[in-house]
Image (cartoon, rainbow, N blue to C red; front, top):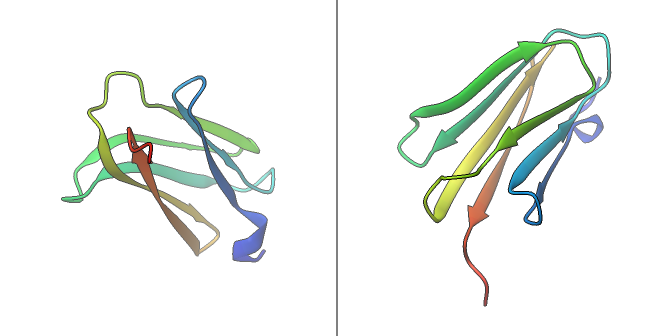
Length: 82
C-alpha cells in the first residue's frame, strides 16, 4: 500500500472529515488539535471513516491515519473563509 491510496477530505456542508483507505486492513484513525491532544480516535478495517466536527471551535486540526505502517496526515482548517 502507498500513501496515495489514503484520501482525507473535508466536507463543510455536513461538518465531517472523511477518510478513504484500502479495505480489509486494520487502520488507526485520529483527530488531533494543534497541541497534539487526541479529540477522536477509532480503529477498524472498513474502507471509509468519518470524523464529526460539529461543536469544535474554529481552528486547525490534524487527521492522522495509520494503516500497515503507512502513516498519512492532513491539516484541516475549520471556519476560515477568505
